[in-house]
Amino acid sequence: MPGNLQILNLQIHKLMKDKVVIITGASSGIGKALAFEFARRGAKIVLASRSGITDPKLYQITSDILVLKTDVTQENECKLLISSAIEKFNRIDILINNAGISMRALFSEVGLDVIRQLMDTNFWGTVYCTKFALPYLLASKGSVVGVSSIAGYKGLPGRTGYSASKFAMQGLLEVIRIENMKKGLHVLIACPGFTASNIRKVALSKDGTAQGETPLDESKLMTAEQVAIHIIRAVERKKERLVLTTQGKMTVLLNKFFPKFMDKMVYNHMAKEPNSPIK
Image (cartoon, rainbow, N blue to C red; front, top):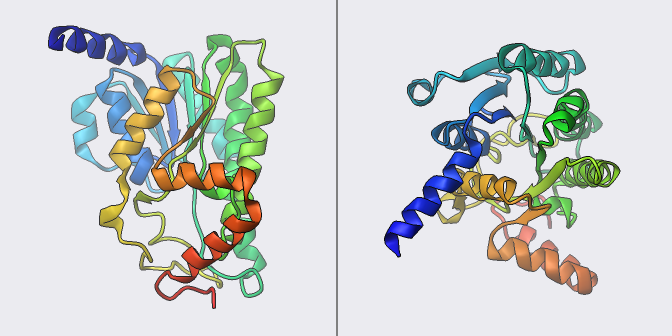
């Protein structure tokens, strides 16, 4: 039996061999973990981030790599990302829309520019990249992935712009899936739940400055590396939705049947966070 499992694992890993994968927000957290995991599986990777990729360990794993400084809020930079991937590798098999930012402030107090920044990154970044990559993904019968959040299923108090952007992302990707259901396009909406990453430290406060400290105990959260493996497995299996962590799954399930109860539960949970804006 162990021998059979080893053979199965090798066969599974070969599924990503020579696939061309674009990952946005690839410099840290889930994006960085995905880059390493795809590279280990033999994929050709195109990595996009505003800061660039500086970890030399990644280049030791693969030489099939293209790194581009990309601000996904800028339409022309997203267009250049896709055209550069085609110029380098001549195809696109998987697009992972991972670039994202969060926020923590009451709607009554947050600046409108903060919400606009959330939508520009989390929603419009997905729109731009997917729009320009779509013809190539249809040609390869490939996959579009949106790294969303439980906040895309349930509005989280103090996360107005974040929840709005993730609801919008999920609606966009659902429509793209339905429109192309007879064309072989795979669309995955992945909702990791709370993950140990840098996203909360750089989350925006009401005036747009970085929050600086995470309100959660990061040591108790699922790691970015664990999330990356779950996402890749979901792509391999052509799953349409992925919800991770027991808490995340329970939130989505209970919200379907008991939304008013979940309103209270979510409010109480968020109110217990250190320095919570919820009173």
